[in-house]
Length: 180
Image 1 (cartoon, one colour):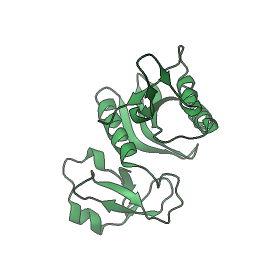
Image 2 (cartoon, helix red, strand yellow):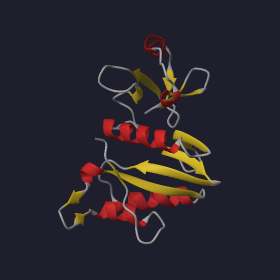
Image 3 (cartoon, one colour):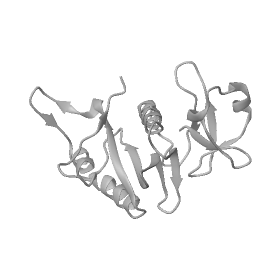
Image 4 (tube, helix red, strand yellow):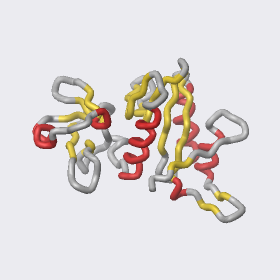
């Protein structure tokens, strides 16, 4: 994840930093905005700096993949070019959810939700209904690697179909993000 609270409960977003002082960051104590567990600051040569939970964490956001982080980073950078307000990993306590990318555009609130692994279709529906209960429109984004296609057809699983129909538009929309 890219956001964490410091010891003074100030939210810090790594995506908004041009230069992150690695050694200083490693010495500070960081907390997850949703579960408040202590998290690690990670900065190595392979991956972009990020925060991660300890291996024994029970937080729902603790098993985020590199693909998921990269997708959020790209969506966040793009949305910043046009949105009136944007936050990555915005914690929404009223529905007990952390939105991947939350933004306001023309007075309407939206979230981009990256779903990088198969889930039960009811999970897609329940998450969508939770956001809608707060007047937030959900835009589901799936990684291109999960799209099965031939020259003449696209084959999708039930959970992917559910994400298509949850956009609230007709015809249903299927949004994929290619991380290559």
